[in-house]
Image (cartoon, rainbow, N blue to C red; front, side, top):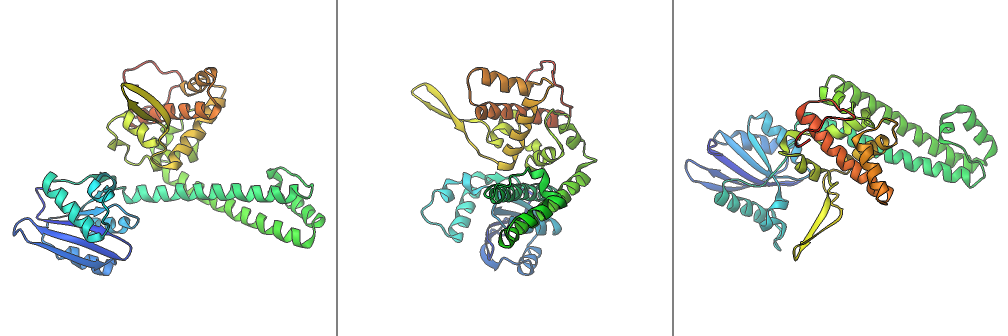
Amino acid sequence: MENHRTIVVADHHKSTFVSQILDRVTGEISLRTLKSQRSELEPFLSGLAKPVLVFVEACRAWEWVSDLCEDLEIDIRLVNAARMPEIARSSKKTDKHDVEAMVARLRITGDLPRAYRATRAERELRGLTRRLSTLRNDRRKQLHRIHALIDARGLSAKKALFVKADWREEMESRLSADAWLVLWSLLSQYDVVCDFMERIESRLKELLSDREDYKRLQTIVGVGPVISATILAESAGIDRFSSVRKYAAYTGLVPQVRASGGKVRLGKITREGPADLRWALGQAAMCSARAKQATVIAQMYRRKKKKGKPSRVAICAAAHKLARIVYVLLTRKEDFQAKPSRRKNA
């Protein structure tokens, strides 16, 4: 911050951009409220005395502001308001108050709590994997509805038949016109969802086929192309985690810790961090546990089962083990070994 002449502290929303501007040379402080539009924000930022540093509260619409600052060669940092009690716990909630609270903290500490600012490429990759996750849930719902309809009429069938033309012709002949209309609409939606899933999966392979970390993750037993892409997308900027423990905490697969009177008790997992990342690690852990090849992940699962733990608890423990392995492989740039030699901090 010492190298910047102008400091902009802003609370950005869908409709407004409320900011305080500090000129570190003249000492002038001004308050500006703009419409949250590129046509207003671009000339405002361009007219500031350079070099400029922008602090903006992390919100839903921060991405285009970040891209604009990059285009104008302006430094930008995202502020994690959740780590600022003067904002998160304040009974007064206005844009002006939040900006003033951030400016006050900045003057005292010289910095503000930061949130990770993903690059454009990282955000686009994450957009693809999260859309794929949504489509996957939609496909499951469509399958349940199709099964419910045909089961109610004693026409049970496996999902592999749903895409067969002869099976659909048979259903059309055996169902009433109204029932077939409902089933046909469900099958049509199912076809569209499957088509989009194939397109996104193909695009992911095209984007990541040349990346070593993408290939490296797939050396882990149980990790396929989709899971590998999801882990990379949700773990963007893995170098920002200074230790394997911090990455494991980010996944939300670590237990809650309650300590009182010298006693420490472990509760349920925190479930913090991206839900899609936990899904990917959990799916990979299940596949690894069922694989014939023995791995440390499968060993963790079986060890928990022998202790009488429920399957979901054992899978969670295996997924936590897998998260630590992912961090080690990506940071050390190593391929997975089913039975690695013991190394410190491995």
